[in-house]
Image 1: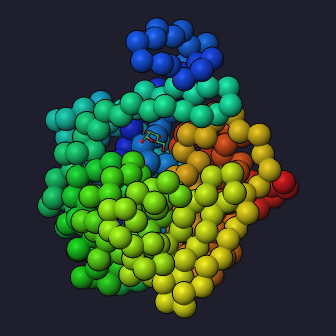
Image 2: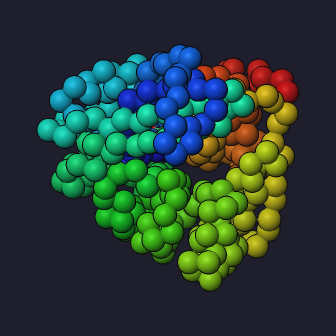
Length: 290
Ligand code: RIB
């Protein structure tokens, strides 16, 4: 089995700031580091580190070879990443000492992925493979439809959240992951609670309380409790969680086991500064004691 990820690739410029900036405020950062990032790239790296075969579908700009090389180095299949005239996406990320962040996103090449490239990539997918999408690229609805028609397990990480973007793919989804606030926003937009969305598996992350799984078939609701850690940087923790859940499912784990593994990976991730480059590998996750 494989995971196909139509996903963003960014250069993350991460600034350590004493507090998150207010409107009109000029703020000096104590440190600045550059990482590989993008919700898509983070999920690809997490899923690869979680033991899955991951094929990333995306685009970078003329100066973006470093990002493709890094994904390859991290075990991601990069054959379906194209180089476009549009510059590589980037994110300017402020992180305060408690680990909370603020992100400014420049989408760049993530919105210029050629549609024929998507078709070519997915023609190599097999029924039962996972297709994951997030809301940082173009072609989300096309990919979701294609995936559905091909018998792929279509998954959507609703981040950055936009209720309209979710509504466009909702009827094609097998798996949806979003946070508690977003689940409420989606309820207001659709009139439906997570258990009534018609999606086989809905995972709602509930911040410091962990995650809740709604099994659309049995109607069962179960929870995984968050682990006690002191966060230094929460950036990419949600992406790490998603990548690890999908890697677990792809490797045949029951949902509860996949969520438990992902929970540990995300807990470790918030104790580290940075994004894709610092996502823990499977051994670190398995060995971690909380
Ligand atoms: O979720 C974190 C990610 O959001 C960062 O890596 C940044 O690039 C933005 O996409």
